[in-house]
Length: 171
Image (cartoon, rainbow, N blue to C red; front, side):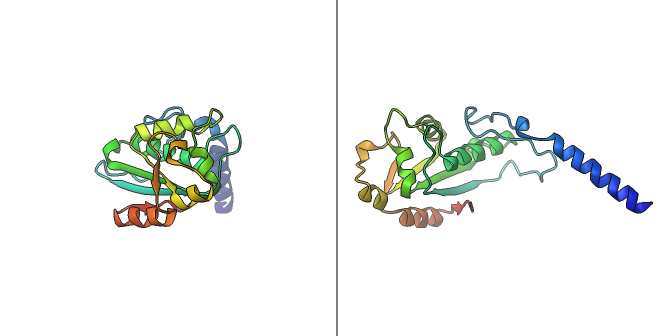
């Protein structure tokens, strides 16, 4: 009898989980056009006084015609935390870019990430290009989208961000 109840309960959980999906992701309050989020009603509540200082890292360029996934993740981070009531002033983000992802920071007509970068910058997100990547790829400051910073290296940028209390997003 107990085994049947456990099986039925497990099956009910699976049915409920199967009802959730991509349609549950909605635009967020900070950057509605990017970084859709889903409500997680059972998640532990966050203190409204919580402060986040998070650095993202990317070396993988977006596919042609698409936005850079790490930049989209930064937008998602902003959206989900503001959606649960964390004040925008308590969320400090930086995206350190190196390797092939440098192309997503260039002023080009076909750069699908450009509008997202503008929205991130409007929301005080620092976008930092590795200077070693820029030197290797022959990228000058004038080639970069407005607001993109240039560091000596990605390693230097991460070291400085860590000294300023930023944690590295682990993906």
